[in-house]
Image (cartoon, rainbow, N blue to C red):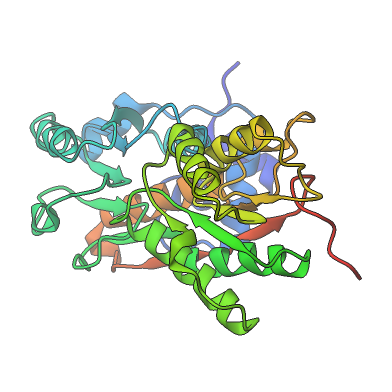
Length: 334
């Protein structure tokens, strides 16, 4: 038999009204109580009656998630967080893949408005026209930064801090000639991770060599090709900070192909902590982003934005990155 709100209330030891407010993202519920109710609902397999709720609220009960690369293992975990949280609150989710194409992204956004989705969670592509988001007609939450747009809530990781932690770890592990191989040059996250890289070098008094800073795309082929350029130039680093894990895996492939011993002679660190990073045959040192939580928080913010009468003010949630030391870097001496 399908669980009801009353079943959840009994199991959680709270009132029916409290469960209703928590599942609908409304005010009047303490954070720890809300988390308890959502956890009980998940465990009981609760599925809200979207049709009944839709008749009352006069919404389509649909959200959209627009991401730039469905093949990048970073995004499925975010998607799962979005879908799980949206489902608990009675929403279905449309998934759109822009393939890092700003024109395709804009087309999706226009189409989603026409389809009357209630709200959009967006991870922008690069080379976007920032004014296209100004006065957008549908509530939206961003998963990365658009520098001139301040009217939407966002959920991000502290990329500068993550870039700093990655580079600091390489330095503490004994590497000194450290390259940064990033993604697209005008990507805000790429710029911030590079900023963190430079800050760590400066703090440890290691001269910055601009020849060791490379850019391309957020794909493994770009990591491989840029690493090969460094090798062919003779200006071979003893470590690389990849702008994401996929880039780092491309660097690792190239390094192994050219006989560089990892991690003894050459260290590699990535960013994201995708599932492949922890595989026994890879064991990539990386910076973890709380991907599932990003999806959850994005939905929570979007639901609040759909209810302006509850004071859904613009918020910026910045999550902390964490170092995951594995086998592609030397151990840091204690």
